[in-house]
Length: 368
Ligand code: FES
Ligand SMILES: [Fe+2]
Image: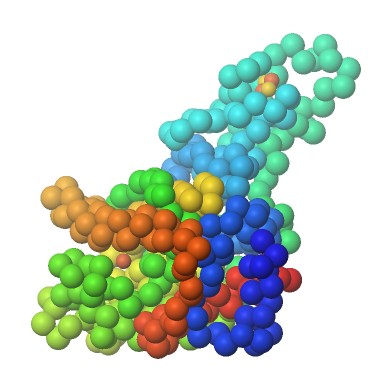
């Protein structure tokens, strides 16, 4: 790992030019992942899903983040809350899967927790001198909802998410993602490093070669436009060809220009999303191990409900371009392990400036 940290330090301090890709070990060395868990995934704002996944009081789903089991639910008062999903008795996992319920019962000794994480029942425990129900709530995880996305900060110490994303807000305001409805959601695991997918989603250079039938006809590489970020996000506009049919329906606030591009952004490090005039496609990334990424992704849109055939067409579109990316990212992960790989030059900012922004962020965070 020290070679990678030395590289990132030299990158940060300008001792090496910020013009080239990262060495293979950045993506393949398990000790780099350990450092990322410590410095990023436990300390920063990480998106774990969409608020519509828990639409009604009692709705819940379970997930994990770098080994921490999490329970995400909609409380009785209608707030999205995230708890540690570990029983306060002797540490069993409490809830599994997803669904709707008012009480979460640990299957081991039947302690049960309500929608605010409070211990509601604990059989026979009144006979225990040490027992104090009020001291046995599930630990609450610090949470922020930004444009309907659920972010958590495990250590509770990160700066306010809203402040960090303030410069991004006016750029995406007219899409009104906060009014869009979740149509579809799925979780997948791909055999690539999480950073490979994060970078891939955020660069327009691969669009022509990787997506000749799916994306190139509407958003070709040549029409990509880099948007400068602020160290917490990076972005680009994928402009539409003049021939491309207008994507609709969209919010009436959208300007004529906004109707003719997709705005792709990354809330660093691990949340990537495209706001199209008519649809949102987002990916919440979590590392499984150095060679695998868990992707919780979904599609949201303007209308409250859409016909099944239209939804199927949207899902097929996303599945098709995702499959095209997946093949490359899984072979990329093999190539990056080669001793003969020497990092090559990045393309100009409109195509790979977002990758340099990602490197800047990683160098800043991992060497701090
Ligand atoms: S570990 Fe959950 S009730 Fe005992
Ligand atoms: Fe792609």
